[in-house]
Length: 141
Image (cartoon, rainbow, N blue to C red):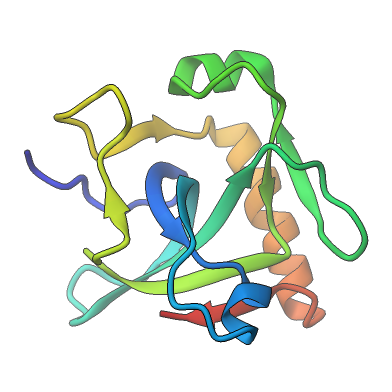
């Protein structure tokens, strides 16, 4: 099993740590689908990725998310429940890292696939907008 090349739009399974959990002193959370929104150059060592969580919880309060259409969830192999990519919370981690896990039910797969380009462009643009405004909270792992 070879890890995929980290590219923006790739959906992985990752031990995503919410910023609020990190503030409480936690080091780990739960494995969930997550989307790579940015990666450092492949010649950089260590290589870093910016990871956005995918959740079933609709965004509330200061949280901002972009809903993943049913057709995209199905193509990625996610469940049928509504899901959002949250762009107001992110992790920065090395690639590869200990938080990566195999996709459930696919013992030889490290990723679900890619978010389609049009949807990914919306996710990236909204993330960058919030980051520039200081409204995307992130942690380095």
